[in-house]
Length: 243
Image (tube, rainbow, N blue to C red; front, side):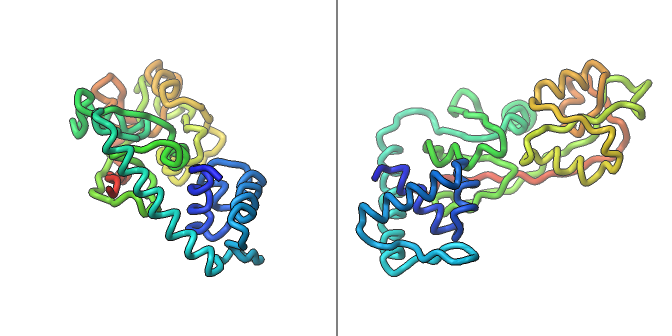
């Protein structure tokens, strides 16, 4: 048994199904099942009772969960006490420029920043310690506490007003991207939608006048032009690690 096994058990316990746990951790369901069997064999006990809707912890499973939560919490605190580095922030590429340049909520001089896709926030938290997480996706983790809620203003932007009504609309291929989700709610002409697997590529194509996209309005400062007067607000959340 290793420390990652403790995280796997904890996630299964909290999600109550192996399927949800595998999705949250970003592992194959068969791997999660195999690790759970290994944990139970090493502990010489049954930790969960399987049923058609998921899993239910046994009495020993409840005891083991208490041990796991305490152990992982102490480990996080120990890691933090060892570190003399700047506070570590985990956020998404989409939010970084807004946090650092537009609103100046974060200083790159005093903060060590890691950027991942929104869908990769939870898997990254399972691998590494971060003192601060700013994300579009609400965290359902006992080791992080919500500190504040903010809004990102967005609008459909383009780089050429002459043909703004006939442009294809770009969306991020990341299913967790909040701009993608909102675009799909607002745009019914699905034939105009084109998936791109890069925020930077989307911005470049929009800047060249080849497409439009729902983007943060702070990009108007870089020469992008609103397609119309509509502004859409998207919430994002700031979490601090519970030491």
